[in-house]
Length: 210
Image (cartoon, rainbow, N blue to C red):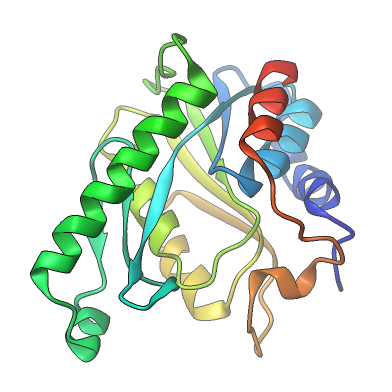
C-alpha cells in the first residue's frame, strides 16, 4: 500500500479515528511541517480543534538526517545515548545543536502562531500526528513534553513507521493508531507517491484555514 500524498494519509487516519468524532475537548496537533497536512485532514473529519506542536530532531555530525535525539518546543530534550556513544558525538556539538534547534523552534512558533497563545491541554483528548516516523526521536520528545502537561488522554496517529519504533511509542501513550508498519522499512517517503516538501507558507495557510 502507498499513499497518494499526505492529505490521503490524513483522511485514512481519520477513518480509523472515527470513534472520536464529536468528543468534547478533542485537539489534533501536527508536527511541522509535513505532519500539519496530515493533522488538518484528521481535525476536519473529526470536528476537532487544530494546532501545531513543534519538535525538532538533533542531527548527527556530518549527517543531519540521522537523529541522535530531539528537542520539543517546551524545552524537553531526548537523547539517544547509545547512538551518541557509538558515533563519538562530542558534548560541545550536542549543546550547540540543541541551541540551534531551539532557535529554529522559536522561529517557527512565531511564524506559525504569531501572537496566538499556545493551546490549553488540560483534560483534553490530544491526537498527536506526523507524516510518519523512522527512529521516532522527534515523536518521543513531543510525547514526553505533552505527558508533562495535564492532558486527559494522549493518542498518537501515524501513517507509517517501523514496527519496533511504533511499539516503543505505543508503550508511551494511551493509544496508538498506525496504518502501515512495514517489516522492511527504509524511509517514510517510500510509502508516498508525492512526498514533496511542505513549506512554512503552506503550514501557516493550513493553520489559518483549519
